Each structure stands twice: as C-alpha cells, then as structure tokens.
Length: 174
Image (cartoon, rainbow, N blue to C red; front, top):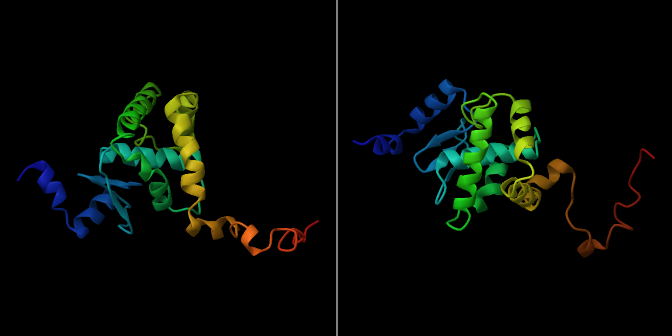
C-alpha cells in the first residue's frame, strides 16, 4: 500500500485522532481538507489540499469573525479550486509560505498566532494574488445566506417594500 493509499484509507476514528493529536485547525489529507471535529470536509479538484487549507486560513485572517465557522470560509474560497485559478493560487500560496519562512515560521498555515499571520499578510497585501483573494471574499463570504442572521442582515429590501417603511426608523438607541 502506498502512502497515498494509506491516507485515503483513513477511518473517521483515525481522522479524529490525528486532528485532536495535532491540535490542528484543519486536517489535510490526500485530496481533501476537513475540520478537526469532522463536521465538514471538502474535496479539492485542482489545488493541493495543503494549498487549499492555507487559502482557507488566509481567508479567515483577512476577514476574521469569531462566530463564523471555518466551513463558510472554505465555501467562500472553493471557487479558486479550478484549473484556471490553480496556477495563480499555488504561486500565491508559495509566496505566502516564503514570506512566513522569512518571518521565522515553517509555513503560513503553521504560524500559530493570528497577529503573526496578519503581519505576514501585510507584507503581501499589495500583490495581485492578495487583492484577488480579498476582493473575491467580499462576495464569496458575505453572500452566503446562512451567514446573514449572524450579521443581523435580513437581505435585500426592495422586494419587501424598501427600507423607508421597513427598518429605516427602527434604531432605538438614537
């Protein structure tokens, strides 16, 4: 059995054990990325699983929301897992990892503190890769209807008569 076959043959119990033993934020396997609690997992098509996991962490660091689960960030960046976007993303994540090594860390994903990861991101924030991901997250993350209640957003108002007679004057603290 090859190493790749061994990784693909993980049972749910083994996956959970590896995740909890490593204290990981994401579990990376051959062709998939999963949550350590195994509540969700995504298969990768064009990106390496490590690249996709780094992209998810990058998304979480760009737009951090403690109450938003990692699976929503994974859905927001899933569009970059395509044959067209893969070369740009792979190169961008390689540059991000190189920047992390320049700061004394093994990789961006392996950088433990959010403040350290944000410092690394600040170093690449002018790059086309960063700007592409940041811009895509605006719609990729905030257009997920399942998240709207967390942000107290009720959706568009035009079909419900507009804001003038529905919510415009609801502010009680003024």
